[in-house]
Image 1 (cartoon, rainbow, N blue to C red):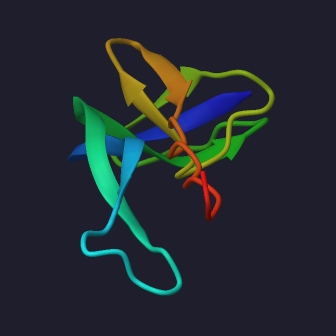
Image 2 (cartoon, rainbow, N blue to C red):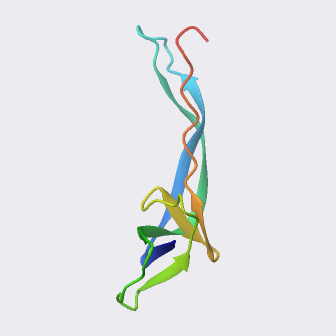
Length: 94
């Protein structure tokens, strides 16, 4: 498989690593992100294809795993990676 990388779409990948209960407690209990992590200066995976085709010079094709998906993965330092997911919010009463 090949991933089409948009070299002009530079962004940061950020996800929630922990949650905290909103103070004062509300009914129902709600949470807000307490901490996040960030990977800086990533490029967008714009498309994934089995067969490449001619593209604008600002786009590049790179090898990627078969399960790679556009916009769910990112490109950095010569490789594609899946975007980390937010840690799930705690259940009420935890």
